[in-house]
Length: 140
Image 1: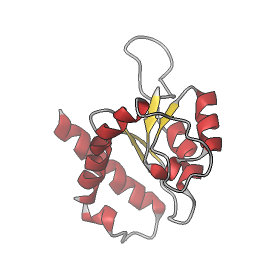
Image 2: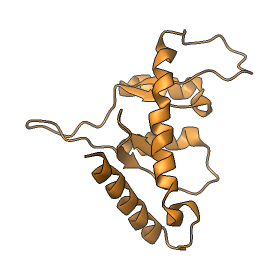
Image 3: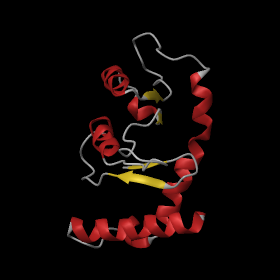
Image 4: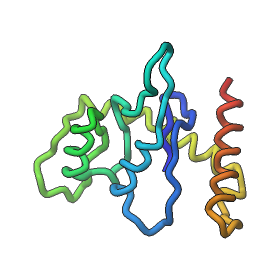
């Protein structure tokens, strides 16, 4: 899982196996983010908003994100039985999710990340960091 900023530059990541549910990995991924401040002070660890796809449509997750001070923006699932918690105004930001998907496409250009040849997570993580570095350098 990758956290990117508004321009699609990777800020943090969490590598795990494919079996756990994404909702359980979101908070671990957000803990990996540390954006330095302009002046003195601790790095910023909590984003204002988290734009995610339908997989994050979970009321307990929304409550946990609200405790952290992060607004979760994701469309509701079609088979949702509880009343909706968001109206269309907040979901207008969801249309900018293509920037996140573009970053995943950029990561897909690195074949070693698409097809995992390395058995060690350390080597895979190293190649992942190298790919994120190249993506970041291409943006500037």
